[in-house]
Image 1: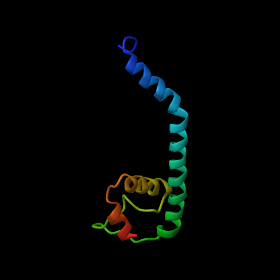
Image 2: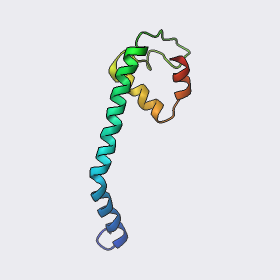
Image 3: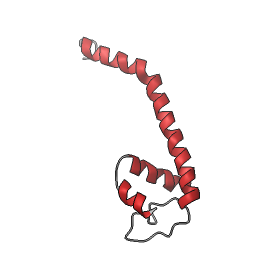
Image 4: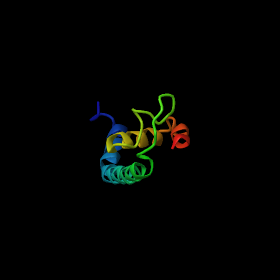
Length: 87
C-alpha cells in the first residue's frame, strides 16, 4: 500500500526528515518538566495533602516521580486550576 501511494510516501518522508526536530522539542519539554518538578519539590514538597483536594496522596510534590506526573497532568489541562489553587 505504501509503495503504490505517492502521498503516503511523501508524508512518511516528511516525518522522517522532521524526526530530529521532533526529538529536540521533546527533550526541551522534558528539560522544562524536570526543572519545574525540582522547583515544585522545593516549594510545595511539604504541603499537607487532603483526601478531598487536588493535592492528595496520589498527586503531590513529595517525590520526583509523582511530581513529574502531576506536572504532566497539569500540562495536558487535567485539573490544573485545582492543583494551582491547592498549591
